[in-house]
Amino acid sequence: MSNVSTHSGRPRISLVICTLDESRSIAGVLAETQIALADLSYEIIVVDDSADDRTAAVVRSLISRDPRIRLLKRQGVRGLASACIAGWDIARGDILGVMDGDGQHDASLIAGMVDKLQAEQADIAVASRFRPDTQLGLSGFRRLLSTAGVGLSRLVIGAHTTDPLAGFFLQTRAWFEQARAGMSGVGFKILVDVLASGQRAPKVVEVSTSLRARIGGESKLDLRIMFELAAQLVEKRTGNLIPSRFIMFASVGVTGLVVHMAALALLRHLEVTPFWVAQALATATAMASNFTLNNLLTFRDLRLTGRAWWGGLARFAMACASGALIAEFIALTALQMQTSWLLAGGMGAAGAAIWNYWSSSRAAWGVPAQRRDAAAGVVVVQPGRP
Image (cartoon, rainbow, N blue to C red; front, side, top):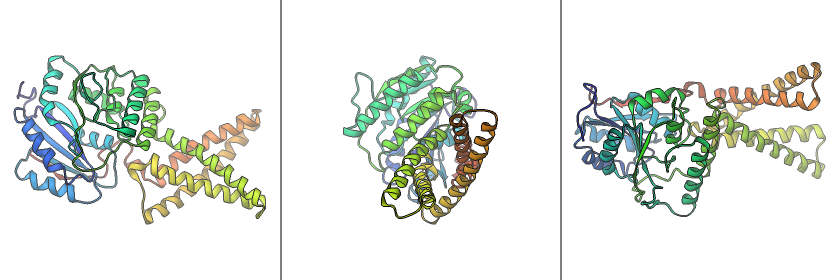
């Protein structure tokens, strides 16, 4: 194993550790990682998305003892994928890696992964939970979700790895730099983004691992993650033509139609209002439902809470109201061009969906500042060694 970087002044490896409310575990994870990397030149970049300052405070206390530790404290943005990219964007190493800050990943595997990456001239080294000689380390519902997600990912993107949802892997700087422009940075499954964003299929090597008991933090694998994953896979399958956020936004819109029709049917059954009032109430109900679901799912990394939630709802309503006018204009224009009612209506609905996504994502959730800059909202608390 070589401790010498191929470029003067660069560490051999830059390891990004992403944290979210993991003040109880991060000190132990860093200590274990420093021991595991003792024979390598390295830097460790902790990217913290916690709402409070407890995790960052622990990291700051350790930086004075080892300036190879760096801290990025992000504000107003969450999400594992964007956190990883933010860390890699400022990393200096020839090899870029990621692992969780909750203690589930075994840092002692890193040196062997570096050796294998170099010996086989690979692009990515994955610590896989699904090799024949490993135990998954999950139980019950999370095992089912993980297995389903892995199968879907392998089917859609054709990844040459047994564990495309792994959260512990290394990649060469060369691979990251040529894949960076295609990364969406949305959601919590970063390896899918890394595997599918390159200009060619990556060469992947693997080592076996199993998840250990979590020291701190909470599991990030749930149905919302699987929803994000499905949308991300569609984005990658279409060559990034259809953004994953738009797919989620449109899916929520379909549920809004169901809510609208259910509310309208209920009001008609009750016979308490004239049609135009019932239609207005059904529209408002569907709009509130769409905003709530989008806030929980589509824009969960930018989630609005408290007073900001009400302001976001008002801005979302205004954006969607203008979308209704756009839909009407497009449909009437198409109808004048001798198209059928159904086609004209469909064109209007499609135009409104695109407008509603574009305008509400900016007005309600402030997406422009986050769109391609994964480091948006980042405060560099400690830049580490120059």
